[in-house]
Amino acid sequence: MRRLLNKDTFAALFVLLFGLGTIWGSGHYETGSLARMGPGYFPKLLGFFLVILSLILFFSPNKSTEGLGISGWIHKLRPWFFILMGLISFVVLGQYFGFIPATFALIFLAGFADKNNSFKTMLVLACLVTLVAVLVFHYGIGLQFPLLIWD
Image (cartoon, rainbow, N blue to C red; front, side, top):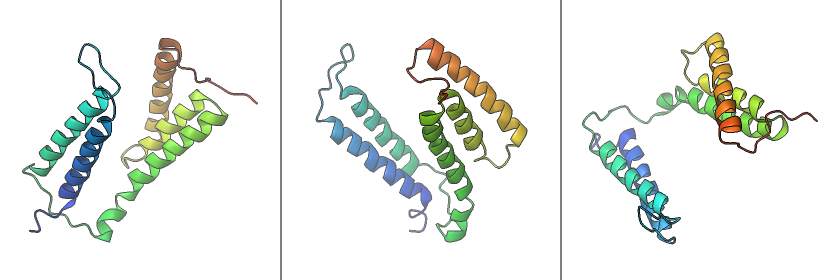
């Protein structure tokens, strides 16, 4: 019984519920066909993929037997903290300073979720990803997001 009640089982159940909820929610929209997709086509397809993924997670042979104790969760707070701070900084900086500082802060902060990344590595990575994001989103597809805001 201990083998069935571990973090992989809970993750699989969460993904299964999310997938089934997505399929159910997309039932309110027209699906259409592959040639002429309706608004419910992509959510329904995504829901089916999530259900399949949950089954793969549940029946995966390498189940971890690590417990769900408090000490196991403390080591996992670092990634959550830095990714959350990156997302919050993107929203705040994007609103008040523009796309370039927001993207830079997002990549720079989220990269520290991995404790092996150094300050110098994240600085270079954030600069390069910001450059590519500006080229792709601003100049490539014309995203209506100001690059810099000077008030």
